[in-house]
Image (cartoon, rainbow, N blue to C red):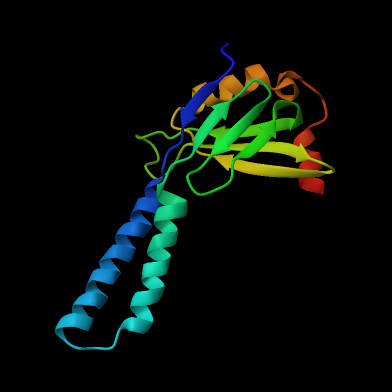
Length: 157
């Protein structure tokens, strides 16, 4: 097991669909603004802002860096999130199946504790199997088989 491993994230199909709808609506409104002289600025400006938000926070994929002591989630515009391996207590993984459900996406819900509170982060790696195996190999809380589920304590808070 190497000290540092970097896995790329994936962009969901719904994000691409939302950007496509936004661009289509912007095209129609700008067409009406320019050719027909209709005053559409009150619709164009919010759609430009929504499109910018979707591109920045939805289309640019994350990268997941497995360091010696923590999982770092890198995004172009976010700050780097560091999750210590010792704080991770559960995970749920779903992998896309292109035959059965076309709208399903690769998703790993990672439950961890920070201070006295429990938190969850959703990761969208391209290779879910490699991501989960790497987490299981590095997180001591995932290797334990306990009769009492730590996920229930997360949901009860």
